[in-house]
Structure formats: C-alpha cells, structure tokens
Amino acid sequence: MNAITYLITSLEMERLKINRTLVVWLAIFAPAFVVVMAFMAGYTNGDKFYQPGVNPWINFCEHLLAGWSLFIFPLYVSLLSALYAALEHQNRGWGYLYSLPVPKSSIYLSKLFVLSALIALSHVLLVFFGLGAGWLMGQLKPAYGFQDFTIPAFMPLACMNLFVGGLGVIVIQLLISLWYPSFIIPAGVGLFATLASAIARSLPVSHYSPYLWPYAFLANTLQVNHWSYTILGWSVSVYVLGAMISLFLLGRRSHV
Image (cartoon, rainbow, N blue to C red; front, side, top):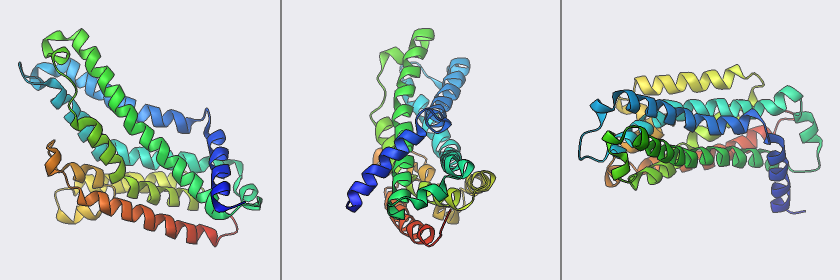
C-alpha cells in the first residue's frame, strides 16, 4: 500500500469514528449558536440596528462575522479539537492505533484533515443558517426590510476566508489536544489565548497571534478590497509548518 492508500483508509476510519458523536454536533451547534444570538439581538432591538431603505442584511452579517471571528471561532476550534482527541484518549485507543501496520503520519494527517473539514463545514453552515435567520426575520418583522434585499455577496466570501485565516489555530490546538490527554489543558490554552488576543487586539503585537487572525483579517471593515489578505498567507504557512512539526513530535512517541 502506498501513502495515499494508507491516508484514505485512515480517513475512512476517522469518518466512522466521529459518526453520531458530539464532535459532529458541536460543528453544527457553534454556527447555529452565533446565528441565534444575532437573530435574537436583531429581533428585539432591530429598530436600533436597521434603518429604512438600507439593506438590513449588511448589519446582520456584520454582527455574525464579528461575533464569530473574535470569540466563537477560536474557542470553538479549541473545544472541538479537544473533544476530537478525547475520543482516543478516553478509550485508550492510541496504543491500538499505533499498533496498526500503517504509518503514524497517516494517523495524524487523517485527524488534521477531518478536523479541518468539520470546521470548513461550520463556515458553510454559518452562511446557510444566517440566510435562514434573515428570511425568518423578514417574515416576523417585515418592517426591517429583510425580504426586500438579498444577502450580500461578501458573506460567503468572508466565511471562506475566515476558515483559511483560522488554519493556524486548527493545527496548534490539534497538536496540544493530541499531546495532552487531559481535556482541560487544550481547552484552557484556547480560552486563555482567545481572551488575551481579544483584550489586546488594539495593540500591534496582538496581530502576531493566530487566535486573532480571523478577526484581524476583516480589518474592521466589510469592504472586500480592504481585508488583510496577507494574514491568510501567514495562516496557511503556520498550518503547513505546524503539521510538519506535529508529524515529527508525534512520530517520535511510542504512544500519545
């Protein structure tokens, strides 16, 4: 068997492993939570947010993207990666996995790709849930004007780029989650890093934190041409470098 065949086999094993687990439900719940919060805020205080004749989708999407990128996304990645790794830690499955006649690299890469795919799915759901919430708002509160406009084109583009901007967080949190069997350590690191980055976001040095990159990418504007696309390159670089470091570190251990 070649490396690609081993990886495909490992991916199929991971798919079966997460089926009907809290890992999948969390990937769905996180974007739904953000949309519900934005919907409730708009429904109760829409008179303050939405002006007559102005596309209300712009303000609604702004709330979604700001809340998701600054707090929910990095915290969600931290919890999801810790929960995902716990499937092996709790069942002591690492010894079994490392006894299989497959390269350790395929085991790690399959987990990294599955975790990345789940987080990509969450960004797709953020767009669709937001679209559904805006349609419902138009039915319940026609005075806000949601039914008279369409969701801005920047929303799906922003979600796609936010996912890329969060790749650095994904690879970091997965390594921490695989290295430490305790659920509290990776979750705590993610919580501390997220809060520290958010509090210090006005400082130039804070933009070196991968946990702030999704938010920093938007550059406090909905103008697509003004987004910080350089951050996407940083994130992809950290993702690739982090994967290589993880392969080296985890490959040297007899067990995780």
